[in-house]
Image (cartoon, rainbow over all chains, first blue to last red):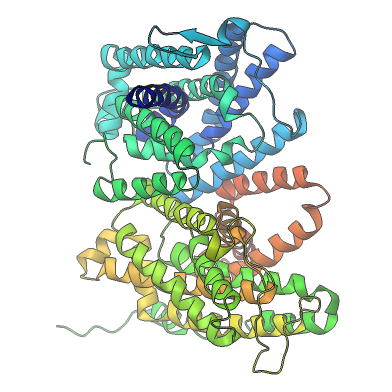
Length: 292
Length: 337
């Protein structure tokens, strides 16, 4: 009995961690841009969706390999979001929260309608390369190869982002601007350029997450609305502008969501909402955020 | 203290302030039009009822969002609380009288608003936005789960609502009774809200929206005012939800979802928030457009709606009424409000 229970826990953890990694890759950009610019960006999931579409269509219609398609998705969405940031988002940095909410909800609608018009309303399948399909022997158990790959990719991305954030000049500038934007600006940091680069990079990461997660999150035009709340929960729980915070929050929520969906399919979502409410009342700045 | 004679601008300000609440000549117009609609379009009364309910819901939201500046994405929580109160009471045969049922719906919405407002309004910004979303999600999932009482995903249908005053039946095919009933409730609620926003309490809400720090500094009980405002707004939303359940004789999860919360927000900003009549203009404009476009061209409708929202956020923050004010403002007058 104990052995069966052990294996169950292990597979549950692995599945949850894989889901959490996707959550992390999508949400990390949202956390940094929200923390940096104080911009309520509800359209972040839209960039993830369009990125997912670019990746899946590049594979299915152009026949590109998975890894190349992921790169193409990242670059296309990063480039597109530079245009959005410069010409539209930048006008609303000083606007009220309500205007930002309205603008980004409007943008989500436009994205949904655009994708429906161009590609169609049906779900797009992600055809994984043969090497990533099937099961892999981990020594103590066998598990889905793709989930293990996702966990590995997530850890690598986390390490890369952490190094970039903690060890580079750019990262130091971003951290400075998150903590005190005015002071950072007074010290001669080019905030406008920082915003654009961060926004583009965050959207590119979302695109990557959209492609990597398309296999189990699905990819259809309703994607940005369907997952809006869960992305926001991850960011709010992790704390704004905190990469490690988003990482832990994604993993916690990924595992919880995965386990609850399996063992408590009825009450799972209620538990996550309730937990988020209690947590935000206890620590409004998030689990890992610094008190203002 | 020295007494100074009021200068010209002072007396102008005093006159503007003293006259703000007076009835303007055009204010009876919407109500006359609504009555005329009843006689002119007897076949569209079901649609008209729906519009009137959304107007009431948008007015409730306007109180919290437009006047007190509480940015919320979860107002459907209270609409749904009211709707499910009426629905569950009627389905189980506990309470089927419409008017008192409506009062119960208002109380239910208000209680949910009070309970959540007491904790939520301690936060601001993104946290507040998230908490309103999560509260609504929590209620929606609870209603989905407690299928024994709420009917779950299917909801509760054919609610046995008693005739109004024991005489006028709610016929689901001809919405004559519903239309006039909802119109009367809307009128009462509107007069209440209009009185409220021009009262000192309403003025202090505007003050909190414009500069919370200063309101703290002058000694206004900011938190308490916000909670009271949120509770009243929630109670009105609950009444709107109760009306919806009574007029349609059913209630389902659509009363609690993000879709409804987003729709009422869009209606309010389309008409112009913080303007009292914005809710009316926005609901009529939105619902008529939706009625004709969303079935025929669903994708184009969504595209247009998205572009419209982006345009409002970027260029026309006052919505339709804001544009109208900008067009009709005479240069010799001082800027209103």
